[in-house]
Image 1: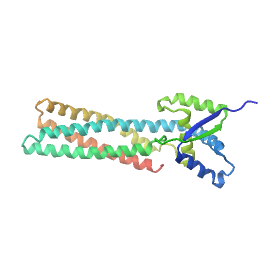
Image 2: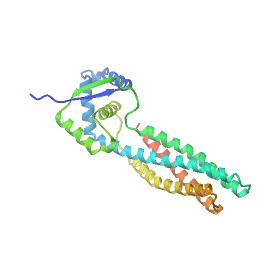
Image 3: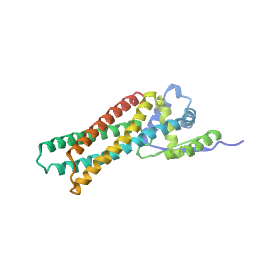
Image 4: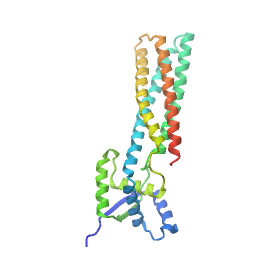
Length: 250
């Protein structure tokens, strides 16, 4: 008789504690760690949570790209205002105030994006993993796991990470599928990513020209800072909507 292969993973204290609490429930009185792990892996495969994680990962990557650009905006706006403050001009003061307002908003919205990422991050926290969990799984399930790890290689999953993800989703028993609104807002966020990149280039160009002591027309700076304010406002609106919608399922 063939013996099913073993599968193992290291767990942190929190995940180990969640498993222990789950096993104390009457519903799971006939379970042990091994059986719970098999149920978690089966659930992960049956619900195609690979696809869910992949979709979430896409949103996180876009958000991180926006954060990089927006951090660049903060630095470039600082350079622009430092150059403009040298000139004693009422119109320049208005431009400085507008850029400064955008800078303040930009810093706030970066924090909102980071909060969204923290909410969406599907698994894996940087915690010390002192415990080991072991189970024997059906050969067909193991092959399915390996196949999906290869398909979703962009997620950088291995069997140990997958087990922790499977346990998380099985223990939480949440609704793990993107809602129509989440998909809608995610698509809008991806479009805004291009807008952020474009306006970042414009602000970067002005900062560069001022650093090189080139003259930049006031009308051009007014136009750019107006567009910047609109883009940042749109980012804020979509990030808040996506966060609130995602919060319903977390």
